[in-house]
Image (cartoon, rainbow, N blue to C red; front, top):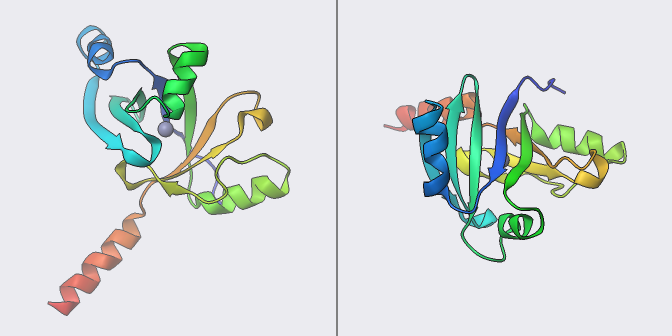
Length: 151
Ligand code: ZN
């Protein structure tokens, strides 16, 4: 199993992206690198780069979204921490055997084509932890190579 190398991002629940972004960009001088809607999570997400990692501002697109429920219960604030993994499934399988409660037993597609899975806060000091597996470069290259050969 490949060791975790870095914090991929920190998720922050906000009521409104447009009114939250300028603090980070205009006042802190950070760079907004993209806004994306993730239908499966019913959120709009703004990524703000800081060094090797990012802040992920999350706005609910639907009152049923887990972000809407989080804000309703606790207000805006830090929602989750995402660790960058190699093979997320391997980590999930191992953690499950160790008795860690999982929200997702199989990673699903998140923003930027990442595969993501959440661990249950009951097992992790009430911190919602996301495992985040970036799309593999070698897979992309293989696909490109196959395409080249078929031309
Ligand atoms: Zn996240």
